[in-house]
Amino acid sequence: MARPGGNFPFAAALAAGLWLASVPPAAAQFFDIFFPDEPPQVSAEHSEPSRALRAHHRYRDEERETRHRRSHRYSEDADRESRRGAKQRRHEIARDRGPPKGPFTIVVAIGPQEALLYGQNGLIDRASISTGMPGHPTPMGVFTVISKARWHASNIYSGAPMPFMQRITWSGVALHAGPRPGYPASHGCIRLPEDFAIRLYHTTKVGTRVIVTREAVEPVTIDSPKLFVPKLAEAKPVTVAASDPAAGAVSLAAKSAVKTAANSTTAQPDAVPAVAATSTATGAQPAAVPAIATAPDATGAITLPAEQPPAAQPPHPGQPISVFISRKQGKVFVRQGFTELFDMPATIADPQRAIGTHVYTAMALDDGGKAMRWTVVSIPSEFRRHNREVRWRHGHKVVVDEPDMPPATTAAEALNRIALPPDALAQIDALLVPGSSLIVSDNALSDETDDSTDFIVLTP
Image (cartoon, rainbow, N blue to C red):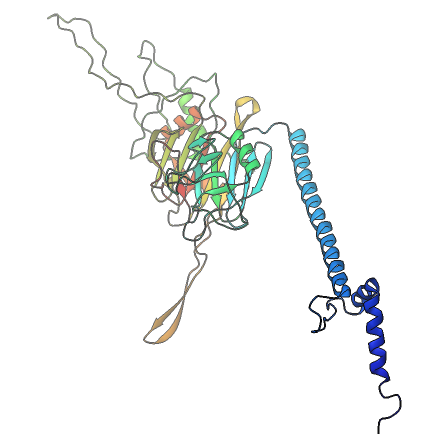
């Protein structure tokens, strides 16, 4: 026997459902409040959704679209404000510092995927980049811009466009505008944002230094008496005799004494002007003077001078030079532009100890042309600081602890360990102008270096 009122819950639910079906907006609000993620259920007896379900879908879609528009508009506004703020900051920096002045240095940091441009006043601009992917890594080391092209197509990768290209190796590595997905994705090139690539292209020139490292580095001012010093314009040119192998090299610290002794040497009266001055610090003998045609003797014969080889092409005054000192090769190399001038033996104290890789740049003349202002970029050494090795011997694990390798010397300490021949010092000082550079490294010259490049030094 049924209890009185037992069907009341069913009747109440049926009445509520009929009421909600007759009031679509109220139904939509009801479901949004109590069941926001669950649309009204459609009875299997109806082939089309009810008005309440259609109202719910319409309300939900409109709400989503409104949220999307607001979010999209906010992101666009934020991005626009970010670009406007970055542009405003660049304008403020340019207004405060004036137009960028060289010599310029481009630093490419593979770790943070960033490129930085430095000049006389420090950091000029920076941008996110994309370098070589695994399997096609971007080489690290010291390079220069060796050619430029506003529009260039790759001759390796199916004519891929490389706008505002600045090449740093002839094997296919260059800086250029390209897509940057936020991670290394190129085949070795350095992809730049288009606006940054345009500014960089119009700021730099062939010969601009490019340094590729793992982590970001920056030039710092260095003041050392061991660095090269330009000769005064009013000083008379001095030709130092070729160094005697027995005399050894002259340290950078003693070069001022060599220069003073050479300048104090005066030519003898009625002597040939081309007599070579000799440094008293080394005890080297003067170079032989060519014989002069003598007056006819009693027999009427005239002694003619020996035939001399043609003089080498003199270097161009005012053009920056590049000096490279390699601990591995034990030599100093000097170039002007892409032209090799000479190379000589160099002595580095404690040759078994790493010296590091340091790039010194002559920025500007100081003290009325008597001194040069230098900056240096020190590339972190990849030499192992410790040699803890695990080996297996006869099925047993053996841990071998070898002595730690001393860390590479600092930029200032590296100069104290170098000794150069006096002839090299004299010629370098005579050609030194702002924009010249000195590279000191444990490594040898790369095979990429030839007569159409500056020095290329790869770092591990």
